[in-house]
Amino acid sequence: MRWLLDALQLYREQNSTSEVQITSVWMDTDNVDFAREPFDCAILLGNGHFGADTECHLLFQEWLIPICAPALERQAQTQLASCELIHPSHDRRDWLRWSQGAVDAPAINLWQGKLFDTLEQGHDGAISGHGVSMVTCCSSQEAINNGLLVLPFNQPVATGDGYYLVWPKTRQEAPNIKLLLQWLLDQVPVLNSKNLE
Image (cartoon, rainbow, N blue to C red; front, side, top):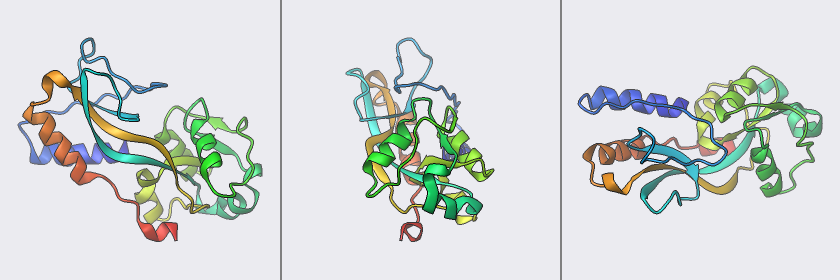
């Protein structure tokens, strides 16, 4: 959300004739019924299959990695099982996916810790020192660069999902959607490789 808000602010400044309104909705499985909901397009997390009546374009792949405040880094590296986990979703899927995909991942108790609704809330909880959270790699790059967060494990795990711009096929030639898509592709955050060495 932080990346998207910054990208859309710049978009508005440079494309004043194209109005963009934003709505955030929590869903267990990302989908939009464009016939019933008042959206021209949406950014959804998934595998690229959002229905026969939609078109989509991948913005970036989902790579998960643990983050924490610098004060918790050593404890997370040596005793992750004793750390308070922050789950950015109620189903705890992000920690589960990372622990199954990371090489020699430390043992964790998936059933303990704090439950939140979004990666953004998990990110903010980690900055405040409330535990070790899971994020999409590129979403916390600024906080990592500024020393607010660290990566206790340099093992990002691909989930097989990605963030897509999705729109109904009936609007596939809409110039504003094409303009927004190109803008978002140009603004996609890139993980600084020095943090994963």
